[in-house]
Length: 166
Image (cartoon, rainbow, N blue to C red):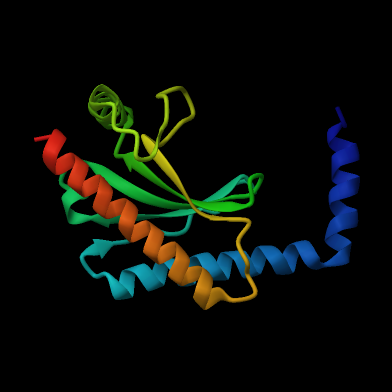
């Protein structure tokens, strides 16, 4: 395992090339535009707060469809750096909400999406890949793909909860 000093030397070398800063800035701008896209096109889905930049592990923003907000649930659109993909997560206001809905989903044996075990550090109940190894050369097409998959996911979650979590 490399020391912090060795990692910092490598980090500096990579920063001197300039690509990391440009890619990171481009990703942040895209994530903000994606958040604004959802806010503007779907006013019933509030997108409160700012972008979570993370520690180059993930960047995400939340969407709160009214039907989920009323249950203390939220949707997160997440970019995962290591996996280099966009995911959508069903999350909750706190750990108690996560545990409640994990139990409902797990008990029902619903298997449409990946159900996440409730362990320390996990902030989701259900996860789904929106775009694996995304193509950033056509941002309109990427946005359309993310939007379509996200809307389907939200609709599926809302439908499941309407039938199983009254």
